[in-house]
Amino acid sequence: MPRPSLTIAVAQPPCVSYDIDTNVAAHAAMVGAAGARVVVFPELSLTGYELDAAPVDPSDPRLAPLVAACTATGALALVGAPVAGEHIATLAVDGGGARVAYRKMWLGEVEARRFRPGPAPVVLDVDGWRIGLAICKDTGIVEHAARTCAAGVDVYAASIVDAAAEAHVPDQRASRICATHRVVVAVASFAGATGGGYVETAGRSAIWAPNGSLLARAGTAPGDFVRTTLA
Image (cartoon, rainbow, N blue to C red; front, top):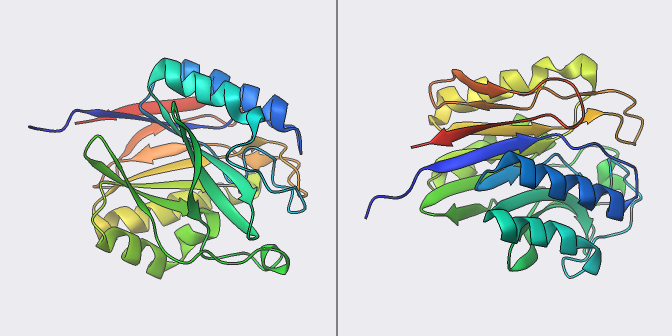
């Protein structure tokens, strides 16, 4: 049977540093609003970009409202959090709960003072669509996209945080990945303040087609999201 179409959204939730309950509520609201099968959130979206935030356990009951939102919409939410083992991670959250899906492989200099690099690329299968995962600096490493896409991917989904002055960087990286690997690139970028010295982040989350053309672009405000349907 042919695979169904896939609606994917990139979301930039409002964020309160360290406040898991408030941030989970914001994520759950955005999953409900997006109406997408897959919703990608920014790096460390559950805690803010606070490199001393406590690890988030996937079984933490505070995640229950997000699990419920995914149950109600049939969504898979890809959210950012620090996790045990000292990793910056992507949690995959759906109606069945949460699990650590991916651990960031390439760390920034300050991040490396606490965190360890993840072991390997990860590709998720969602309704027959193969989604490769990336977190921020990963997207600037040619080897990361090469190894991830070598596993066979349809979508390269990245969770990032960039300062407003660096808003051009994810566009340049997405263009390179599209040109090299001919895959959809979906980038969820923080908007507004998000801790770690980021008083104003870039926003402008976006989705690009395999040929590099822009499919959807959010604005610069917290709470914005965009989505597109892949067929």
